[in-house]
Amino acid sequence: MQISNADTILTDESLSSTSIRSLHLTMTFSGFEHALEEDKAKDYSESILPNDDAAAEKAALRRVDWHVLPLIFLFYLFSFLDSYGSLLACRLLLGLALVDPQAASLPWAVPPSPFRGVTNHATINREGPLFPCLILYLTIFYSRKELAVRLGYVLIGAALAGAVGGLLAYAIGYMDGARGLRAWRWYDFGLFEDKNYASELMIFRLLIIEGIPSVGLGIFGWFFLADSPETAWYLSQSQRELLIHRRTRDQREASTPSAQTLHRSDVWAAVKDWKIWAFSLQNFPSDIQLFSYSLFLPTIIKAVNPEWSTLYVQALTVPCFVCSALVYFAVAFISDARQHRASFGILGAMISIVGHILLIAGREVAVRYLGCFMIAVGLFVVSGIAVVWMPTNLPRYGKRSTAVGMQLMIGNSAGIAAPYLYPTGDSPRFIMGHAVTGAGLALSAMVTGFLWWSMARTNKRRKAGKEDWKMEGKTEEQIDDMGDDSPRFYYVT
Image (cartoon, rainbow, N blue to C red; front, top):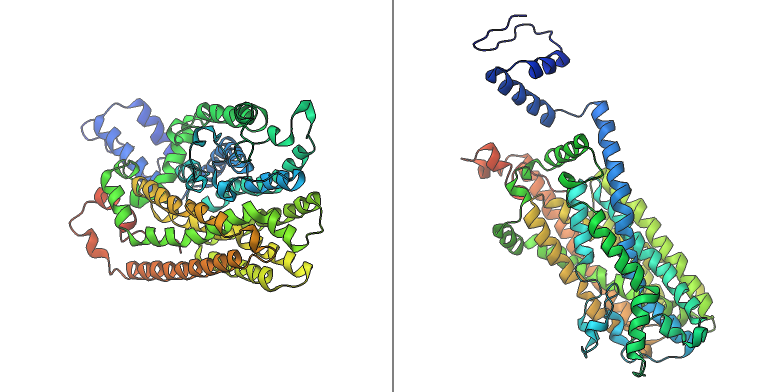
């Protein structure tokens, strides 16, 4: 080995990487240090991770999973738990009359006391910013090859709330008279005709069943959840660096610091992108089905056989929601592994449409209950794939965050329409509700198919080099800042 004091040249080609690192720590020649750091960065970012680094990546990802997924599952579980279907169980049991059937759109995770002066309850969205923030939060920590499965832990909160919420409401119904209180005082307020107990019920609503866990969970999450991999307190420094490297590796087209910052130009880029509006249109019908099914499944099952008891009806909702969660997880694993979304969304919509047809045309009890199951098969697949597909194709943080907000703002507005689709007078077949929801799913499937065709066509053009002109006159850093407009970026279809 020969080392020149002036230029710091290494001539021994067999020098091991370990020896190079040792020399880097001991030698102070600026030229040598600069060259070594440059080679190290190049090797780390452009090579495939060796086995030891792949194992370290899995270990870091597992630690993120354990610190992120349980908490976001609980967030969505509590936000979904206070459903109209659960209130309906108390109504069926105690014979209470709802003031406004559209009160189903009241917020679930936030105590409704601030909204008591609102006369049209349907104008208040039940989720607010929670779900879009959860989606955006997951995209910060997980790559697009992992996002669909991780979203499943959010959706399973909704499934568990649907399965357990009705039974919880039924159990609370049997608390009628406990400590001198009617059952509905233990559960909710503001939706019933008698207004004399409003202030007392406000306290019970806030403190007894849902208020304490929800508020406590929110405070805990404020301190427990990290804002990003850079600030994840539960990771070691090497693990934080590894996750940052993953983001650069998996989103090379948005790997610059500027691309991971919210800019006004990103907001306008999202507003002007027709694909985001198409994704929003795709999501709206699936959310109509998600909201109406979650809210009215006990009513639909009760209409299948009016002789069934309330307890039996609530028990029959549990397998449907369990089915939804299991099917979504199976689809999510395949979708992430194959990096394909569209065909699963189309297939899920078609299966759910068949379920709605069975509930309209079916005569036998078993056939109509089968329809509930077929709707459940596509329930989370259609809505889940819709909200995962779009952000995986938007590597720039600013455009992605704006797009997620747009998509879920439009999608969640389906909560306004859903309660009007299943009026009590349409029982037992609810033809209008099933027909409108089925037609909406057909529209969603068509939009999904068009997005699939358009993105596949763009990928083909980029592979053929027909969009390389966009990179002319740009530096590598500018190209890495282009996001989904980059000819090097290929859409997940």
